[in-house]
Image (cartoon, rainbow, N blue to C red):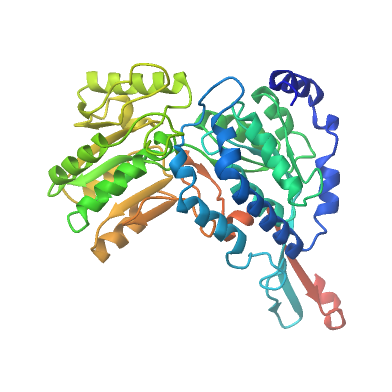
Length: 470
């Protein structure tokens, strides 16, 4: 393979604007949009089957091991091969009929019959969509955008994170091997400075971004100036609420997993643990003990629970957040320090007695640091959970139906999971509110983000008079 640095440099010059691409996305779109939804669906199924067969041993290792770094993605090997990954692929390949399937709801919804006319709504593709994707889940993030976007009849341009170029190239290869025409899905190995130019190009119809608040603001500004649709999935500081009626030990077990998924480098990782005072001490003891048992080390070894953080900068940021918070009065229950030696390791950490004026109270902590809070009642729990600029996910643990319903209604988040951890599921819409972004991925709502919901109204012309048209 050509040296990656020279490949990226060459493409930075060659792709100074989209006209330099070997296959124009708008040209490919004019051809691909005519394919039946059933044809698109079968190709998507082929793509995901190819991914399922090759990722666990091959491509996910590429997601870990890039050209100059031994470890750049901190997902542990045993979780890559786990049943949850396989179940997501199974659902995506053989799940319920797609909302645009002509044989079911079709690209045309049911007819609405009026006295003098018939009307319906058709969901038509809009064109090339640029996807700006992060490094932390380098395959899943891309496929959960690409599958519905391509099935809707759009074509896709991928600008992946700069530290996972081989993952980006392999994703394009998977689409080609699954039978998609060249150009329907294209990877762009370009620098971040070129993103605005592509977003504002007239041939690009829309953009979706998963990333930081600052990246979302920048891309959103460019999309807004061009009056283009944009879907943003940004940061999160998800609350994990435990009430006395809930299973406290199970909540602690799931809470540890929810906080440390991908070594804590996940937007929907549980970050703020808000516990009713009646069960707080019990929860804290369970939680800290389970953190203490986690194995930290090489993520490619089967027994590892926590691997290194992706970069030294991420670890330095976490160290600053924790150290400044401790100086402001937060109490360390466990961890709070880096692991000495090679690698960007940070010890699984829990903080308590957290004042409002410290960094971790307001900021997203993108690593294995849990924040514990004690509250007196459900009202205080909801108020504390909503006291955040973020609103991505939320998890509540209660066996009281009235409590559960109140949480579902009053928590300011894009999703609330009762007695389970927050996950993304191909069948359900995924996204947030407030500074966690806008728009939805996945499910019926996700596929309809990048379509033209077109009203078609057919009048019975023989019944019209001049008065009807005035």
